[in-house]
Image 1 (cartoon, one colour):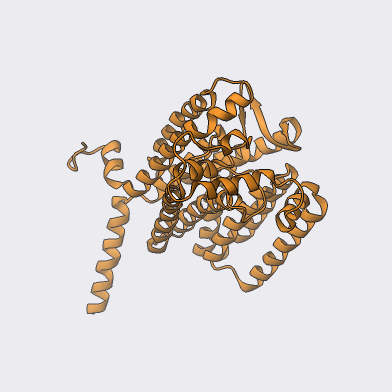
Image 2: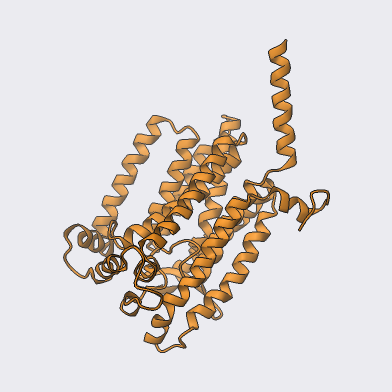
Length: 384
């Protein structure tokens, strides 16, 4: 146990970290590791690998991911901005390289092969993009003569163009939704709301017209015709699970669906552990989002407010998309369930997001001192 009387980086971190956030992130990662035992052995056996191949790899990526989350949580807000800038430049460069030298999977070039590992640069781009846009919005709010909003729009255009070029419409929609939410918080004028709303509708219509795989997925969702085997099976597995599940190891969806340990792990959890268990997972994500927005509402610093809100929205919307696909409420989209699904680069990247949230929501002594001085100044002014 660390005493309050102690001084040092570790003691300061221990007494200033948001333990509720930390507990939620650790709990989600623990649930993900537990579910990897339920979902991945059947997938590994089906493709001729050792039964616990994906379990071992999940553990292999889990340890450095936790280290990344804890390491980033020690950073100050200024250091978070600097780290995000470096990460954004590196990830955007890697996304460009992936278009020319990346590994093609199902018609998309999103991955870079580094030795025996495959890295998806766009996963690391997302938290860095949120932090830098929050900084740009805050600079414009602080000094209106600085064209921070314009730079944020240009940056979003670059990111969206690279995602569409892969192509990855799901990540484009996720990034646009989070960016739009932050812009709205920053005081987006109504003219921009109309312009960007029209651009979003036009972009979706263009994607539907020009990208056959996007049109096929949307048509399948609306009409129910075509190959909807994975989504139908996932929904039926959730129904079979009922309230308390079929029991650990008794599910069948993991033996049928190829992506049961990634995109459809929510269905595996529902079938084996029940709907109540899945409701707990949803409540944890809801808690993270609501606590983050509460922090943002109370925060005086514009950069911290926008960044925390954007980061928790990103995690919440991504979880909504994954769960919505499992429930057949949305068209099929390959998107992981944050901190739970199997995935190397996605796990590390989500832990970068979690680390940024922990770093920006710490109760720093200098912030408390500033708040006390503002409070005393208000009392003196009122007395005068």
